[in-house]
Amino acid sequence: MSIQTTTPLAHSYARDPEYAAGRADAYDDETTLTLEQLAARAALYAEHAHLLRALGYADRVLEKRLEHDAVTAAETELAHTDTGTHR
Image (cartoon, rainbow, N blue to C red; front, side, top):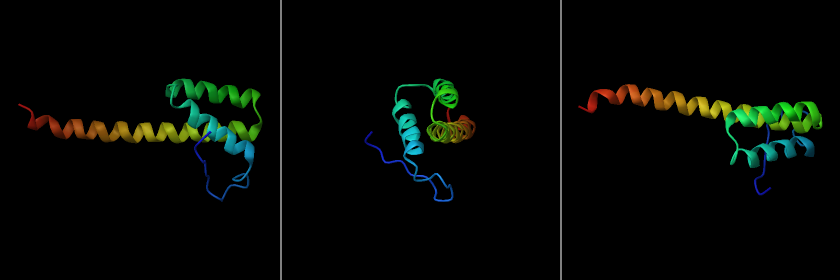
């Protein structure tokens, strides 16, 4: 795990090693798994892993989903605005 994971200090578990390990696992997995596979793995973490590890994994998967949705929306907007220039 070469990436340092951080969370807002508002969470009481922000410095818990299990939470950080869950986020790190998700960072590692996102290079090889699709978003749907990450969500399925998060469900497995919720059933079988330490609670804070599962929460860390799920938090990163949610962030990844939001990043994906933001990029998709931006690309859609560009596609709609660029259609008039290509004739």
